[in-house]
Image 1 (cartoon, rainbow, N blue to C red):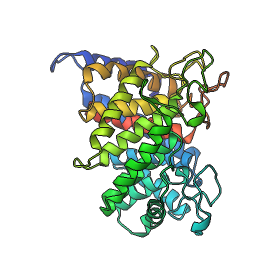
Image 2 (tube, rainbow, N blue to C red; image 1 turned 60 degrees about the vertical axis):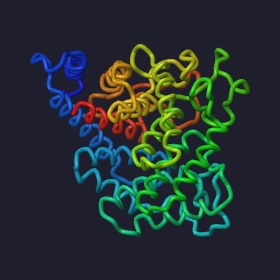
Image 3 (tube, helix red, strand yellow; image 1 turned 90 degrees about the horizontal axis):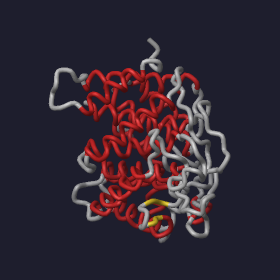
Length: 380
């Protein structure tokens, strides 16, 4: 039977499982449900890789997909997934932006090879570090270390000036710390994050503006509300998860990250729509109404990880996850394995922008894979 057609049936089993009492024989096996989701991961990832046999540049959108693809490899152990990311890394010479002239390295916004210090060209280092850990070879992380260690040698702290950048680079810092043992990675991680916080974080709502242009009341939604962009906050919640995964228990800033993660999780859960998705403007659903997958998938990943690792209360967050997962697998997932309803590349919720079943993107697939892998771990 077509997997998409059977989604309602198996999701119904998940609901039964979620609400059954301890070990009742009538309940479905969590491992059976997990196997169903592994099938979905294969369907989605094989569809994407088949449709995209040529490897693109090391910019953020491709790299965000690979962060999900590597998670699928870690879950399944399927070497085909790993080899797809390895071929992409080799295609890009294990580099982000390729300039070797440090005097011209920039970090404002740009897509040319002199934007070496721009986070959108540094997220690739996450995948390079993962591949290094699987098969250690110093050349895989040589450029990552060169770039990040040069950056840390400067007196600048304003490298992360947009919310997306936290997902792009915070996990790079913790991954390279784990490889090198250099404590400067953790010090600079906190220093750069503190700057980002001072610029974008709204403590009243426990959410992040996308960047300085969107801070209320300078910028407002169509109904005059604060305009927090879903995918932007999805990037941040997922960044905090990835940092906490790798951060030492002894890190002096660890509790700060935990507190922020929990505050964001609570704020995010409160914005969920009854249908399970999050709208593009979190506090004003009328600003850009309708489902959106990339933000929803990042939130699902972030909340699931918190439940799986004891940071979030299951009784509180499991109903949120169930609704989100139902949306992701019965609306976002298409019969052929395509992930739809992904808002195109941008930086804000746009009134009137069409986002539908045919709207897909590499970073949206990556986010879906992250959520699906974490759902399997939850069921197992």
